[in-house]
Length: 301
Ligand code: AMP
Ligand code: ZN
Image (cartoon, rainbow, N blue to C red; front, top):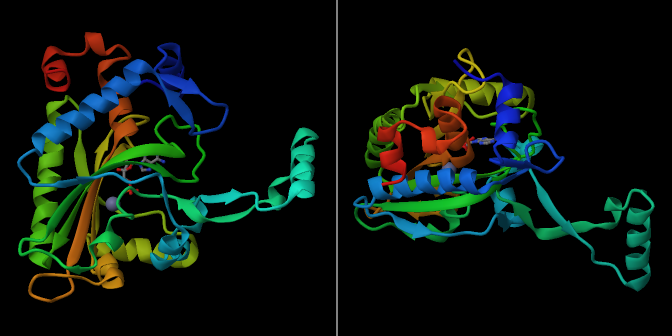
């Protein structure tokens, strides 16, 4: 049986797993919650230690020019987060502070900086690999904070959360085979943790009317798959891991080529770390010390 959305939220807060901020989809992680997240991420690292991934680390912001080049605003303007700051002189500084103190609109006195909040952990990676790939392509691993402007009361839909991603670049067949293998592997990993996981073809929340067509095409071409676990409901299970085959979308923009000189293909997979943790909590209970021994053994070896 699943907790209702309210009971889940109350339980997460009552057990100090989640520390609310007053903003929807933005909360602090308590010690135990963070331990679950870290342990799951470590389990993924152990499972993949022989894969030969290059582990990189990026900040949670991206160059504004990269967001433009990726066409993010064509597809997901509703999710974007922009970093603005103050560029004025003394008099304006006094004015902005006064406005904020007195509850007036002060944001209009800010101007855009060179950065936006990262909407996916993998976006920073592609521009770093322009040029020719080694013979077998590349495999990259990143864990990063991402922002998506989708305020919600669902405890599993956050504005700021972490993704553990793997990014594969190479020849089309290699990349597709990697994605297919990982779909099985991801399912096996999550099922071993006692999660009632299933996979399905999926689409991204492209904006507006043309977006509906893009989403339909994405499904038709089977470019996106998700692993879903019932958290809020059985009818609409929650995506805990996604697999995206970008074809030559990123490699074309950044000139990423195979050793044979052709435009490479790329694919990524991303575990939503907070979602995996909440799915585990929802399945096994609010106190990890009481979780089944075979689940605990894997996360706390
Ligand atoms: P996506 O890039 O949309 O395929 O997302 C990758 C993974 O991040 C998904 O499978 C989810 O597990 C997680 N995720 C996506 N959106 C959210 C959100 N708003 N809150 C928490 N996790 C999310
Ligand atoms: Zn990605």
